[in-house]
Length: 323
Image 1: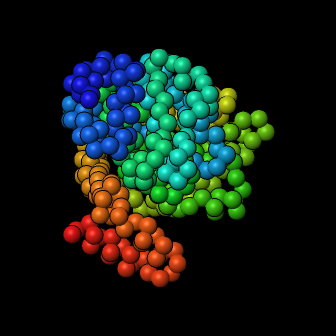
Image 2: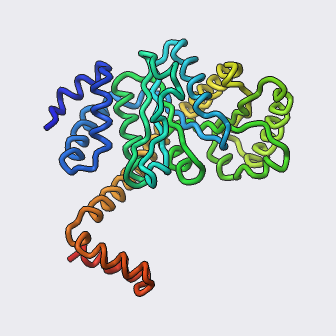
Image 3: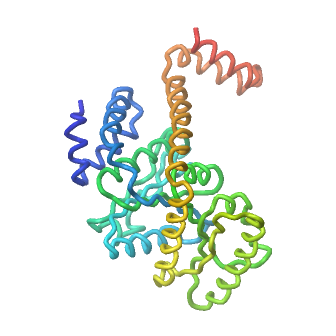
């Protein structure tokens, strides 16, 4: 049994053990823990919302961890308190977790002004996203004024993270024109700032060329618009160059949102998140319902053998749940 009020008090004063305990409670699928987590979030939510929320995604091999550590250390040195979270779809399938090995960010991990949390390692992508979004509330209530959320892989996780942050930062590396075609238009459409990382050594000129090509592509995507056009920058997380410029553009985007509807954007995110929570809760109830559990093996064998179409199996499961 958790004393939720005491836990909330400890989170508010920034006790690291309490922060970890609160996030673990949020990630739990136990019914009693979920009830306690809802109570905890009710106490903490009024004190959250003040952080700059940034999603960080990128192509394979771009050096996200190195970049996040470089950015995090820059922010800590500037007097910020930085939280790092992750949304990792692979953790749903494998039970593994990104950021589990904090040696990937060894300097940031030991900073008293930073907190790094692995992705939840079980459940659905929706469940992982729910836990990550609510962990962000905990960090904000604990006084972290910047929260970085790393996405792993490509696809739905980017869309999910873009729906919970203020600014979505996309990282890429120097590429040829043909390789640039491989960057999906969709990822550029949800990006607010783009940075070409690894602009160091012999790759500086190539990175600059990539930056110009991407900037041209983005101008076409946003042609005719009167709003924000994502800037394309170059940086080297390894050497620490350009990181301050990337952050300045993040802040500029935040200021742009402040003048054009940051409050409305966050309100819409909360409404979308409400329905995501409903879907996640229904999924959890289906998975734990004894009537569904009793027929699980029968349904599994019938579908795998081809005796029962998936649509019929789904109807049978829902009929059992509704009975």
